[in-house]
Length: 160
Image (cartoon, rainbow, N blue to C red; front, side, top):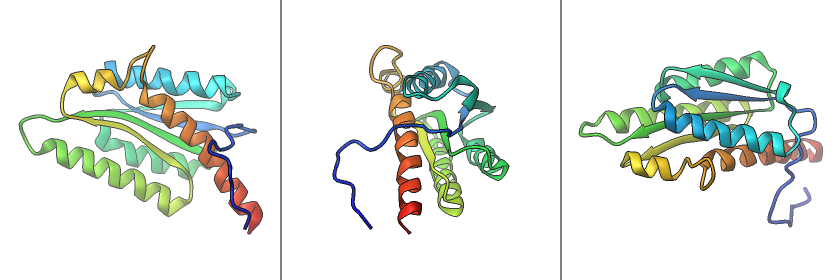
């Protein structure tokens, strides 16, 4: 297998379709992440018709929706978006941890890139700092990751 030597991977979308699963809980934060994802996909050549957005109530429901999207076999990658903010109870740990585990389980069990774009922060201010429309936006990073991972997997499959 030939190893890649460049620092930035291939971001060309080809004919790939992308799905985004967005939680409605903390929608002001998640909507900013969604804008970061969609703007970045469009800027990198993905057609608007090749971007599907599915909304779920909260972060806990994201893995199930992602699994059904994988089962539909229409998308090269799925990007998950949500925001879980630490509170005074252990609820944060359960929701954030199970969401992360579920997203990873879907990705590993199917071989489809499922990108974890769920912010897990201690304060609302930290979430806002990571989801700025005209500044740092983790949605941008998620879109770039999805684009690159589609090509990494495609290249691995070609080599084997």
